[in-house]
Each structure stands twice: as structure tokens, then as C-alpha cells.
Length: 123
Image 1: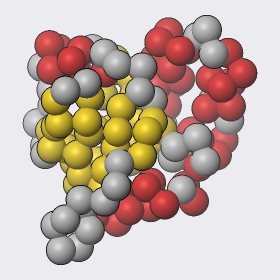
Image 2: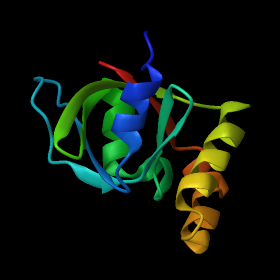
Image 3: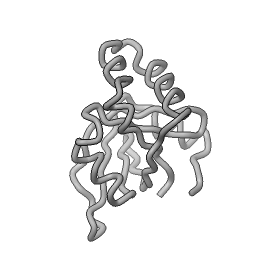
């Protein structure tokens, strides 16, 4: 899978909140869920505050595709699970972007949300 260029990653992650919509098996798009989004260079990540049990997260890993509505632009995307060393990169990105919401960022760095981290790729 290809990655974003830095300009695309910046555009995708510029808003504080974006809408993530996963695809159904028939290709239709579910109702978007509002989430936080971060980047590290040209890589883009999302994390489920409710861990792996969140509906949108389960659908994202089951189908692997969806859309992200960022500002006035909607991007077709693919989702890939993240683990290992990338989790520290994502932790740092959340702390950098949303550090003024310290208690929420602290929660996002707990085991449950960390285990529900996805890289967002061009779809």
C-alpha cells in the first residue's frame, strides 16, 4: 500500500476532529463517527478511545476500507493495524497535537486504546 505525501497527511490531520466511516460488505458507507486523528511525517493514525470493542474499529479491521471526512474533503482510505514501535510514535503524536487535553491523551495511551490503533492509508 502507498502512503500519503506530507501535504496530504497535513490536510487530512489538520482538523481537531474528523469523521471516520467504515464500509459495509456491500460497499456502502456507514454513518461517520467523530474521532481524533494524528500524523507523524507522512503517516496518519487513528485510535479508538473505547478500545477494540468499538463498533467502528471492529468494522474498520473487518472490511479494511472506509472514508475520512476532514474539513471539507472526504478521503477514501484503507486501515492497517499498528503494533510494536509504531505505538510510541502514535503516543507522541497524540501528546503533541492534543496535549492540552491531558486526561484524554493519558487515557488514549492506556492498553485498551493503544491496542486499537490503526494506520490510515490512501484507499
